[in-house]
Image (tube, rainbow, N blue to C red; front, side, top):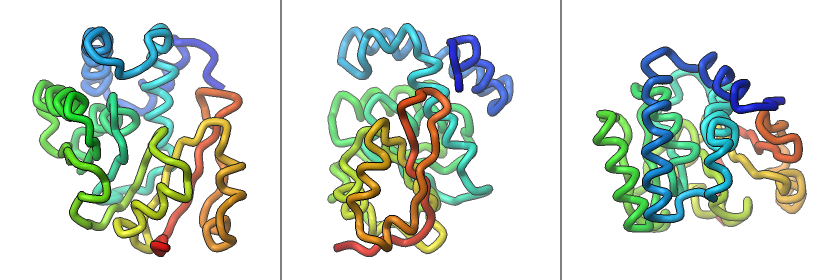
Length: 208
């Protein structure tokens, strides 16, 4: 379990090359500056930004298949986990779904600044995003599990990896799902919070 900012940075460095770490180091003050203009993340969390946001995002790489194809991040908001992963893996095709205008502008500005040409901002509600096959689907604080799966089922295939940070509610939300969904997923302990977990699954979800 990551116990300090120094450990969190080392955790990220083990999953990034030097260029990626330089991008993340440059991104953090940009996040703090933008947070003064719009409430992207809680101000208190900026004191633990490597743990709460960067390592919390990059831990998903440990559960991602090799060469997964398109990575679809739902409700990207401030950029976690999707933008952080794009900064760490700029050659990974990434689509960030975000409907709020100022956050769309923020995500696009960061992508332009760092030349993240394989990271696309889909500035729309998820319901209005054109269907496409996703190799990975992520979402942090986007919606309760049942609603999340209903909204994103049309992007999934039999090989889609679902990586869903769910905080303290992971096991409870999974237990509320039908047996076929419970069989698809398992609960993985978060590396950044002893009380948080990630729902990890693979497969196609049928829309209800």
